[in-house]
Image 1 (cartoon, rainbow, N blue to C red):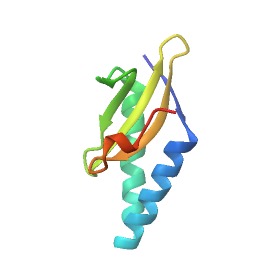
Image 2: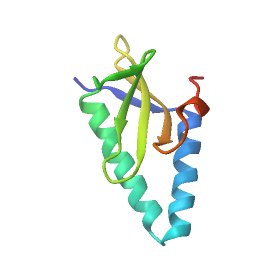
Image 3: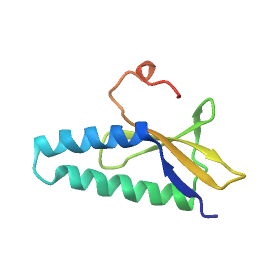
Length: 98
């Protein structure tokens, strides 16, 4: 079952901040981060039924970087809404569902 991926503004901001940070650490590392995120979006697209962590929010850990992709599913519309890409060392209380 293929789901459409919609990346919300908050998640785009999270991704851009991480890209900027990684590029400051090493040239090209931000591009590698983005590539990994896109691979994980493809995984969600093909198999969106990952574990629900809280409320209706599902999470997918990014394998090569310490981030979790937080998303909501609309099964009726077959759409996955990416709501945040959150660094795993951050306090989860800092992030709230919009």
